[in-house]
Structures are given as structure tokens and as C-alpha cells.
Image 1 (cartoon, rainbow, N blue to C red):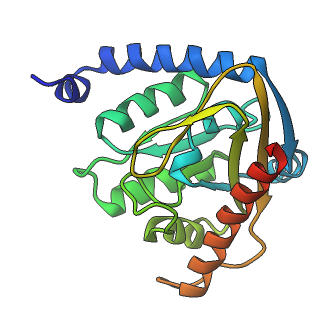
Image 2: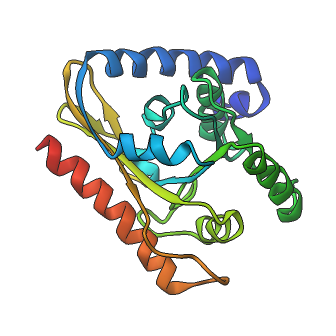
Amino acid sequence: MTFRQRIEHSRILAWLLAAIASSYLSLCQRTTRWEYVGLDRLKSELAGGPVLLLMWHGRSLMGPIHWPVEVAPLSSLYDASPVGRVSGALQHRRGLQPLEMSDKMSNLAASRVVLKRVRDGVSIGMTGDGPLGPALAIKDAPLEWARVMKRPVYGYAFSVKRHRILGSWDDMMLPLPFTTGSVVFARFDGEVVGKANEAARGGLKNLLDEVLHLANKTVY
């Protein structure tokens, strides 16, 4: 059995890897001098109800740590892949409420689960370019959830001066400890109506590109 298959079949192994990742990212969080942009506005918005939080997959590693879980809960969606399983376990360790989107779950069933959480006041977090890419391209799912939830949409990105870019499809940024960093939250001022709304797709892409650019600009 390959290591990938072991993760797929073992929740214990996924939790062990998540514990290691959580400890490392916590170290990075504690030893980094962070500058936050837009966090106060997000917290104020959360007082009125949940939001949809979007980010590019390549800057998702620190998302579970930077979300203000002390203000409002967040339910992040993840897939059943090995990386997804570890991500879900990591989110759970950080106090979030991860939701596995398996192939066996129909779109209707997934919608019911997510909308129930939204009605309970839980925000939803997901990557704009999905679990497999292509990178920096808005998938249909964020558009659909924004349309169905009818709640404010926020973009998120982080950047750090000391880091490694992993050789993955999304050029994922791995932070290194003892550095300076930036965390950016920004609200989408447009509206998502109807299905396959290309104007909204372009607007969400611009939002995520802008928060990414601002996070990088603030650090460099």
C-alpha cells in the first residue's frame, strides 16, 4: 500500500500529519510579525451573520489559523484526497468545522448540509480554484455557493517574506518561521446572480488577485 493510500484509508495517519502541520504552522504564526488588513471589517460583518470566504489554493495553508474563530465559526470544504483529508483534520484541530465533499455525496445533499450550517450562523470557506486547479481560475462552485447563500463574500490571502514555493500545481506558499508577513481580508462589492455568471466570475477572480497582490506588496 502506498503512502497516499494509507492516508486515504487511515484517519489516524491523517490526524497525525495534521498535528505535525498544525504545530509547524502555529510556530510560524507565533514567530512572524504580522500586519492585518481588513480584519476589523470582517469581524464587524460577522456580527450580522455568516460570510463566504474565498482564497486561492496556493495561499490556503494559513487560512485556518488566520480566521477569527473566536468571533464566529467557519466550516471549510475539503475533498477526500490525501491532501484534503490532512487539510480537514488540520481545520478541525484549529477549531473550525470542516465538511468533506465526497464524490458519493450528491450536489443536493451537499447543498442541504452547507445551507443548514449557514442558517445556523456558520460561515463557509473554500478555495476559488478548487482542489485540482487550474490555478488562479474561478471554478463554478464558488459562484454557485455565493448565489445560493446570498451572504457577503470575502477574499483572503497571506504572504510572508521568508518562505518556500512548493512544486505543486498551485505554487503553494509554505511559510518559514521568524519573518514578517501580511494577512488580507477584502469584501466583494459585486453581486452573484444566476448560474454561470461570467461577470461575477471575473469579479471574484479580480478580488482574489487583488488580495494576493496586496499581501505580497505589503511584505515586499
